[in-house]
Each structure stands twice: as C-alpha cells, then as structure tokens.
Image (cartoon, rainbow, N blue to C red):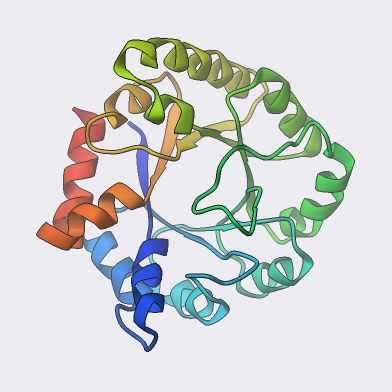
Length: 237
C-alpha cells in the first residue's frame, strides 16, 4: 500500500499573498500528520516564493514522519539540507517563470554532475530521490548517478483527456518496472487528485505518492486533517 506524502507548499503560498505569519506551514504539517500523512514534503525554491529557510528549520523538529525536501541542485540549499538532515531530498528542475514544476529532471544529461552533487547528502545518510519523467532512459541514468529513489512525474497522466489516459498509464507502468529492476524505490507525484490517484496507487511496487495542491485546495472547505484522510481513502480504494 503506497504511503502518502503531503506537500504543504501552498499553505506558504497563501501566507505570502498577504505577508505576515499566517497560515503557518508548520501548523499545516501538524494537521496533515493528524490526518494520516505518512510524509511531509516541502519545496524550497531558489527564489523562496513560498517555503523559506526558516520554515524548513522549524519543520525539522516538529515533523514526526519523514520530511522530504524538494530542491534544485543548488549549493546554498544543499548546505541547509546538510545542516537539518531531512530523511529524504528530492532533486527537481526549476524555472523562475513556472507556476509549478513543468517536467522531470534531465539526469541522463548530467549524470556525473549530479553524482558529485548528491555525494555529500548520501554520506549524511539522506535518501536521494530524482523527480523524472516516465522515461526508461532517465530511470537508468538515475541509477547510474546514485539515486535511491525515482519519483515519476505523473503530470502528463493527470492532464491527459480521459481517452488518452490509458497510454500515459502504460508509459508510467513501463518506467515503474525499470525503477524496480534498477534496484530503486518507486514514488510518483504531480497533478494527482481525488479522482485520478487510484490508478497510480495501484501500480505494482508503488511506495509513495506525493500530493499537494489537490489536498490543500480541498482543505479550504473541509479542513486539512479530513482532506488528507480522504486522499488516503481515494488512493487505497
């Protein structure tokens, strides 16, 4: 049964809309855990547009489930990661102008660079995940670079029309098999919601689902604890 990682970035997005201290992402992490979150995910972007360094520092002692820090391959954020030592770091690509992550990390084009970048994090005992497109070439490159986990980008599946979803699902299935065959853990995320999560959760060997926007959106109406609980129910049928 796949674990649920809850991304709380958009709680910070709401805070940044007006400035000040509310709503507090740390409080959101507590509420998500009370709702059954198995992991907490935050993305510390280069421009700090939502989650900031202080949020990450305050979250580390409060989060009682594994903390997954999403980040680009940037030295200053790696320094922070080495200070707080989250249980997992997920490397993602970043564009300043994007609203949300638009695609997977090109591991195949920078295997040696990424291997060097993640080495200190691995030495610190942090699990390293690569957020990649559902491409067998990228999966194999992630294994060569030394990643422990591949998080498959489910955006194309989530955004596809119903008639095209089966093809996207088969692409994810093939990449999933490659992840397992390469000896890595299989995670998935991006664009998943209460209606489409079930098929991804049902993929063989799926370890973790990382979901944010849909849960935070639902929580506006019913509260974060219940929104998390409902997502777990949707994922597990």
